Picture (cartoon, rainbow, N blue to C red):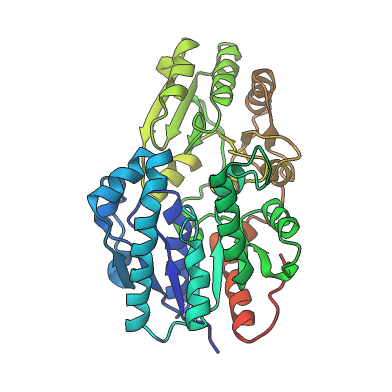
Length: 407
């Protein structure tokens, strides 16, 4: 058996520019590349509005079934909070019908693969297991759901948390494999669901795109121009305090080699304001959303990369891009966090929590002319292709009736 025919159910998929589209899009491209083109069930492109990358044609290359979602549903989702909650019943019903339609036309599907973020349609996976006997994988891929729900019953646990907890437990109970992106996340779920076999929980990391990076890796070298700090994606959105600490650290660096800070991604007014309040508006530049390859090109030409994490158990996807381009990293994370435990294995990574610590890290990089993140672990193990090979081996073992290797 070469491998299973997988149906990927992912609300976000190329050309969506949402973070939730990255994993499912890369997985679909990987499976197609190894001769196992998946079937994809996803939202119609019109649902994403302007939040798209214009350079993706993957939908035209694969067997994709689009779920029609009206303007009313999109309007509710865009409101966030209560609005998003009100949209859930309509979305779940639409996906149930979309999956049924896809399965009627592609009865050769062996496995359902549900991509999270959002997570409201995960219970549908068990519905199709009970109805059609189709095994399924739950890929949590992000930490928001686990972070936002306390999973406790009692006076402080609201009705919403109770139903979310029950819905997740019902979906996890029937899953052939439950995926997370860090060992800490998997450990939490093994503890939460002790009654489920430990081998059913598998860690498949985020990773960098090996093919996209191949032609963008020049030798690291210092220059006489501005010392360039790059931030790929969110920073202030995760913590305004971290944004303020970074701006304060840059302001404290003595005059000498000029510093330029580039933010690559959706504009963050709080980040820009933090630098403006320090009188550094001229050295801060918002570059906006960029295609992945262009973003990597900007990272490769930087002297230092900065990140933070939304929680102690998550590792931002960009961490692996940073590792791949092999530039020094200043990370606003704790040593005990998932991101901290990974980055402390590299000599050119500096874990900081305050403006003073960030200042010392930047001074060290500049004064000692630190130009690389390595030496450290072999970076190839952090490529998305490597991680998907591990996943495919697990799926093959699963379809052959064998246990999935824990990891």
